Length: 486
Image (cartoon, rainbow, N blue to C red; front, side, top):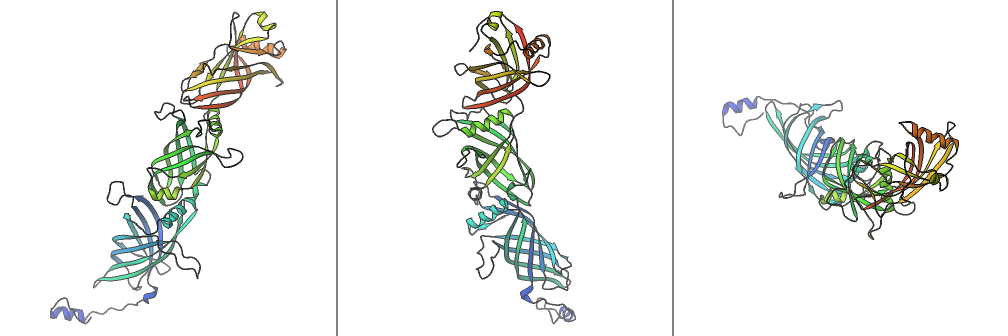
């Protein structure tokens, strides 16, 4: 110490002159922040109506590894402010270093460093919704897209840090410490890992006011696992919908759309209630791929769906750019339950049965979905099995109801009118035994039914179904000859 210019006092000069401080100084070119590890990273956007509407906002928790210019002293940092620039990792020489695509200023904060075995001081950094100046929107979108798609994402962090350190004799300010680090962090992996993306339920919203002659609204319960520390408050997201491998040749046909409103994708498991719609083709005809998807759904079969990111009219422009072409694959479940619940055979007069080989059947139909359906047609082949498992045909029927569809309310049942069935092999021992059981037992006789049916949902989509059901309970009633459909 040689004196004090701030205090014109002789005793202060005497005191300062008696001070002695010895420390090592690290060469200036080696000091600075040498590494940055993101413990948590969240990207959001300023809300509409605010002065900075749509501006990216970054929140983070990070650990910076600092090589101090005063390695002999502990760092009790009373103020630390950092200006950072983000860019893609530098390619191998001699290619030029990439230009930064974004910059941000971390607010001043205090910290106490922890000295590691590598000689570096670790300092925790935090920031909450710091505005990001986007210098190159395409490159910034590429960085976010990489975080979505890759198992490991990386970014080059450069900048300058200003540090004020508390020492025994007073504060020491160091300005312009360089920041230079390639930071890697776990990405979301494109949600390709088994179980990372699921459709947990589908609801046909036939009572929605959005139903039209060409549109059927649907709802999806979606689960997504984000294994990364990266959160994105993405706003509205939109995906086109296709059935994997449909049609068998050529490009998959898009027949619908799914939208997530105000989506926030946080680390860990996320659940969303998404809205969607299935559409007819532009010429008004049914899409075979949509019909197959609905057929699988009503039949209780899973469907492998392809979802492709598209622009959302209410979405954030930057996220729209990120999601464009972002593809997801997911298996959607069907509903549990069969269309045909039971069959009642009406035994008519002897002449009708023996001479004309006709019976009247009434079929109890069950609607397994939470929306009204109409049965447009029903075709069935009915058989029984003997004790050895051999199949014995009983009869067949087909009825077109398109002129007067059978309406079945949500999750309800309906009984068809009497349907004429052509009887085959009626007098075989196995068939006769089945009729006796059907007439004598309250549980009925077990029969097999196969064939096809056509349903209509919300008076919009025709849904072809394949029937292969059994064993079904069959009952016998005795009735007078009468008319039947068919």
